[in-house]
Picture 1 (spheres, one colour):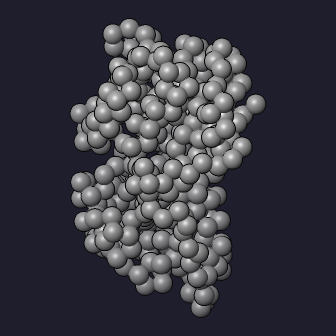
Picture 2 (cartoon, rainbow, N blue to C red):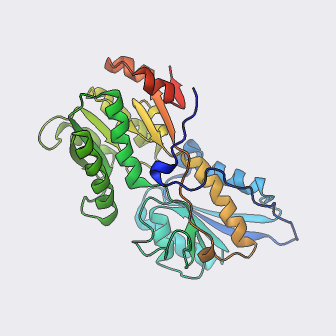
Picture 3 (cartoon, helix red, strand yellow):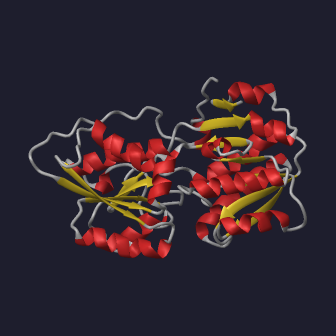
Amino acid sequence: MRRREFIAALGGAAAVWPFAARAQPNGRIRVIGFLYNNSKADGRSTGDVAAFREGLRDLGYVEGENLRIETRYADRQFDRLKPLAAELIRLNVEVIVGSGPGIYAARALTTTVPIVMAIESTDVVADGLAESLSHPGGNVTGLTNLFPVISAKRLEVIKQVLPSLARVGLLFQGRSDSPNIRLMLDAANGMAARLKIELVPIAVAGGAEVERALSDARGGPVGGLVVTDNPYVGNSALIVEIADAAQRHGLPSVGPPVYATAGGLLGYGVEFPPMFRRAAIFVDKILKGAKPGDIPIERPAKFKSVVNLKTAKALGIDIPTTVLAGADEVIE
């Protein structure tokens, strides 16, 4: 299907990311740290880790020749991130690459070791990671994925498919009073008001709670479900679990692009492997002498939409031709 690009409405950066010059081997082996929130198996299934390594290879870095990557996996146990980050710092890595909680764990321990965000969903300026997106000013730079805005946009996507939807659940992981969840809820509530939808926040701590949460949604059953990025970034098993639970409850649902691939009805958002691949360019700039505080933080410019017709048939839903025509991918 033909590709749609949503740029201006979501405040994305320029769509074209220039290729950086290739690394020039000089006999020195550069050492970087890669701090992954999830498991090694998750990294393989999502393709995040492979994408990052491919990005480095494209720039002329060859592990064992001019590069060593010290990789640490937290296995979704976030309390392990700070000790793992401390271990990387003790190894004198030249850059630490991570995402989400891993970024904050590393930043809490160092203001001198450069940190590259492969993905970050929070407001990095409000949280003090950067002075601004255009000039971060400190030791953190990289990419952010517009988490609050994308969650709101998914409400619009599911309303296009089912105009009669009046009550929609918003599934997320974390406390509803945390600053970043609050930002996301404010954006989603604003969109819900415009679409005349009652939005029902559904907070879960993990996969085991999804089934219960859908059954016990505040105020009774919901007619649809919006799944945010933060319940399962990098956790392929949880992606499938949420999609299966939505189907068992007969709920049309929308989540990130990979969510539709896993069995959800609709997918909309940013694909994460390209962001991990792009993170390699930030690493390359830093290894060549650039200061992270001088490298602008980038926002995504391309967003992917996916429709799962197999799930639509199982739910008895006819997808409008306008939605099908605008989808980047249709799963038959």
